[in-house]
Length: 122
Image (cartoon, rainbow, N blue to C red; front, side, top):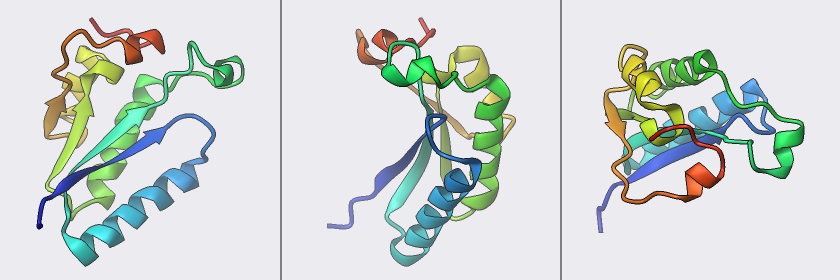
């Protein structure tokens, strides 16, 4: 059909930094093969109201910004890197535009799932 889609990555839970990079490299290779992605969206794990929250801390702003910057460097064949403000907060998403993101996403109506998980955005 030729319909492009988005690629995403949930990070900040049980993976290592090496696994984050490997995930992005797999996406890069797949994009080279197919050209099927229009956007990459990294999602930080929100541990507050989960079983993992007992052992995993929420990612820091710097970790989120580094992840976006590394995505921009590694995913040179992706046109768009999005900062998802619902999970990052609006101020961090705005700063992310200077770290490689070129779009802010998160137009939602009465979003409850992420806020139940501990998102601090409005």
